[in-house]
Length: 123
Image 1 (cartoon, rainbow, N blue to C red):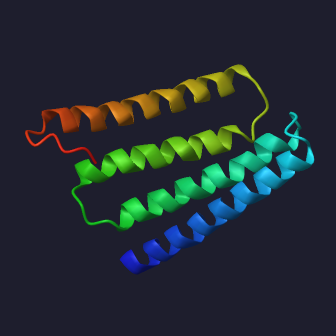
Image 2: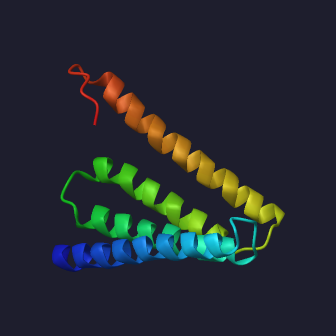
């Protein structure tokens, strides 16, 4: 299962990089002006890198508590990518706030963990 999940991670990682290239090319062709396809194209690399990171986290053999921070970050990117596909609405604002909350909590947990260490080595 580990090998399969790591293979999925590589596939999604490659898709994310390709998605970023397509996004930049598309935006360049629109002279970096807002366009209706930007959000949809931006969803592809966000969702792809989220699935890559989630697959990687699930393939890792660290303790669940350690992996949970990575999974939380992966799910935040996944939700953010899916949000890009939705039209503006109050629910999208709630989803956006949820993503921001997850990012803040995830990084706060990392900061707290490193501040508690006695060796104070940063990741």
